[in-house]
Image (cartoon, rainbow, N blue to C red):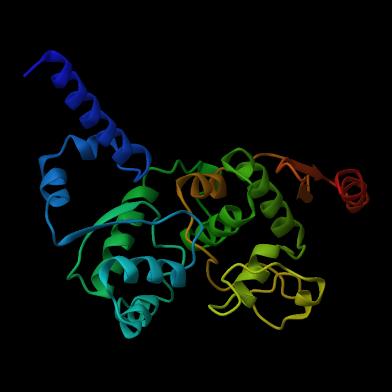
Length: 264
């Protein structure tokens, strides 16, 4: 075989590995594992990429499409917390690329994702000052951050604002929680929030009810979890994103109104 052909084959192989890393999100440690390639070559294994910020119904659809679940199996996945003796699984389906056996039951898949969450949450630094924060509270906040942030760069600022509102006794007034309250398969899981939606009588309506919603509203990634535990120190209580996705915050409502006029 000519060296040119060898080079081309090596280049193609390297590109394939790169695709596994960057598209599916597998780490180099995964690629170094022999079992990884054994699983990849196994016709009974399916690769499912779960993005950050999805709600459990969306993950059920993703898994169902890849694993061939019928509607009842999707419902079983959505209600897996009952079988696992938990209050809710929302927030604990860790987002990453999974290699799932096509014969795994919905509860098996839920347990796999919960195990991944338990492994990853241990890597999040938790300052001594925030150790009084319960993990459940942190995940609720992380889920809101994940949906509210325009990117990882503003997550810690949004976290600081959320904590400021909680400590000051303000209502959170987060659109993402309203989206969770009104979302549906028919109208979309993350619908546009209208002014009238602030009157929706739901515990997830943080314009109406104080404090955090009863459960997380989405499944956050590591950056959002880290932000929940490690908020940016700020005097801000209000924020908005301009049309380019840049965040602007203010410590007063008057300042917030000025930002609205300036950027919209």
